[in-house]
Image (cartoon, rainbow, N blue to C red; front, side, top):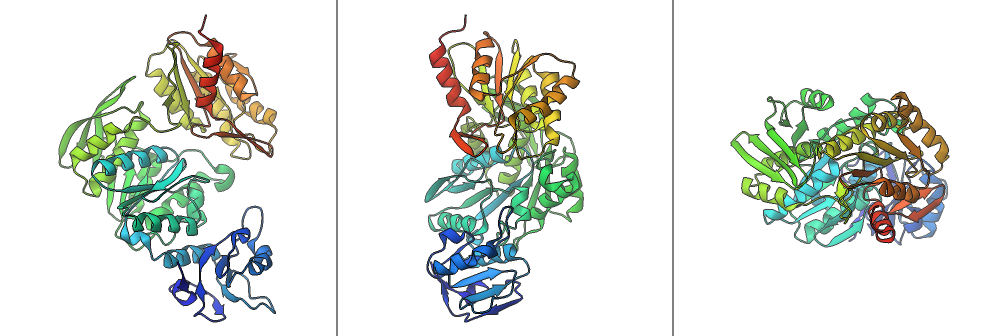
Length: 491
């Protein structure tokens, strides 16, 4: 794909362009090491480095143009685009370069603290049941007609995102469902995308190491509902206080969902078993019984969100019900690990106090003899949630094993101490500390007796562990299988 610089920069707020605008650009990149001949290099300021420091490398590798917030250096012979906000300019340039693929797709953006991944899986299943061809961009993978890739981050950078949307559109894709993180909104990765529907799930304490306050976190999420040039509908969980606030701040076009009777799409008479959940779904045109293999109360909200989106996009109700029934589960989201020991073993991504509470509540709903919890907290992330996670464990688990999650550059012992402060507040001595995660899981399995529920929380679908600079393979579900296979039956 090639395009003139004039067409790429059309409509983009720039301070100025120095050089010929009729040159042909072959690609757009923000990584100097990936620059190819005739590319446009966007010099972005990141957390660890400033792209302006890598302009010489980009030029040496063949960049034909540079996008920067700085003036063109003396003696440079490449075309230079100066913009006050290079991230926004790059996103809009990428949309131009890839010929605005979002205009050829029905695009759904899902934001919020919890539930994003499950909602995208539900919508993918619903659209497939309706004979459509969806693509999904999210935490677990990027996939759709024409491609499938392991996700490096929840929401990719704008050029990568626009490129994948173009692949979807060119290969017959009809819908794109995108998990939209607060970081991606702050970094303008989804600018230039026209969203048909924007979804707000909920908001709870997370990423406060970056956002600092819940108000700032909320304002980042709110950005999604004010982007793009399409007539967008907003689907909002108004049982959540932040969702209610968002609903009140939007002028119109809001579809509310929840358990409260004021919600436009709501659930009643919910019941839960080990085989899944059932509810009476009420929506403007009537009501029906809905069944799903997914477990737990949080999935009531996830299903209501997906139903609201699908109805908004005129998906027939029978296809909606079929799609929900067809989804047996989501990797790393209350993922059951089959075993011959009559234990209920689940791997889950819960890595905040609120998510941990929901996980424990869901487990309790299965009426186990005991709930045994294995968990930790990520390093180089929000420290304030660690004690709260400890409190949740101390109050609602029968026995907890505190272990490593992804400590990254932090001292694992310091992370564990933060968690212990919370668990000690509950007056419990019902816990152990086993820093090695494999040993912690092995201990939980050794403790488990028939009828117990073992929860392994924090990493979910992740297949790696980061300790210091070392990234090593580690998949909680696989580790459980290995230990069970090696250990034999419980005595």
